[in-house]
Image (cartoon, rainbow, N blue to C red; front, side, top):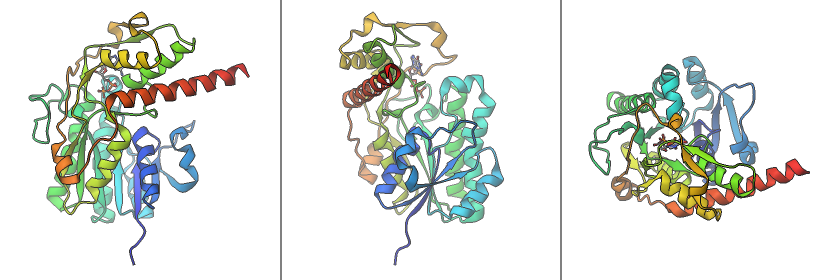
Length: 329
Ligand code: GDP
C-alpha cells in the first residue's frame, strides 16, 4: 500500500506556487501551503483551488513556526517558492531580502533536518545568480556573479541547499530557474507590466507605458513548464541541481513589440523609457542551457515565447474588459 503523496509549498499564493499546487492536485497529491499572515489576504491566484488545499500560517522569518509547520504536515516533499523575489525591491530592502530569500532557505532546511531528514526538498534558485555571466549560455557549471542583493541572496539559498545535501545526505535539489512568466505573473515584472499595459491601452484605460532598460535580454519561459521541472527533480533516484530555461533570449523591446502587436497596437506610439526604472546594476543578457534537465529529467518546455506572450495579452484583455464592464455596471 502506497501512502498518499503529501507536499508542502511555501509561496503558494505566488505565481509558481499556484501552478505547482494545481499540478500536484492533478497528480492526486495532498497539497499543503504555507501563508504569511497579512492584514489583507492575497489568495486570488489559488482561489479556484482553495477548497482542495490546506493552508497553514507560518513565516520564513520565524524558525519555530517553520519547524512546527513541517512537524504538523509531515510532508514527503517540500517546495520552497517563497521569497522576496523582485530585484528592484532588493536594492531598497537588501537586508529584508536576505532574511527571506537567503536565510529563509536555511530555516526550511533546518526544520527538515530536525523533523525528518528524509523529506525531499526543492529550492527555487534563480538565473539572477549568474548576473554578469562569464559565459553564454549558462549551465550548472557557470560561476555565479550576482548583480543585485536578490541575486546574492539566491546564491546563498543555492549553496546552502547543496551544502545540506553534501553534509547531511538530504534529498535537496536546486532548480536554477530562468525568468518564467504567465498570466499569473505579478504586474511589477516586465512581461506582465507590458501585457497588462497593452490591454489597458487597447481598451482606453491607459495612455502610455513607461519602462526602464529596453535593451535587457532575458530567457523567458512558461511558469507551468517550470513547476513540472521542480516536481521531476524530486522524483529522481538522486538529488541534483538543474538549469531550467527555454534556451532562447529576447530583449524587452522585442517583448513590447510582440505584446502590443497581439493587441493590434504599434508599441512605438505608447512605450517610452525613463531612467527612473533603471537599476543600480543591470544584467544585460541571460540565456540558459537546460540540456542536463532535457537529458536526465526528459524535461521539455511546451510553450514558445510568442505563444506565452499571446496568452498573457489575451488573458489581460479579457480581465481588463471584465473589470471595465464591472465598473460601468
Ligand atoms: P528579473 O530578470 O528577475 O529582474 O525580472 P524583471 O521582469 O523584473 O526584469 C527583466 C528585465 O527587464 C530587467 O533587465 C529589467 O531591467 C528590464 N526592465 C525594463 N523596464 C522594466 C520595468 O519597467 N520593470 C521591470 N520590472 N523590469 C524592466
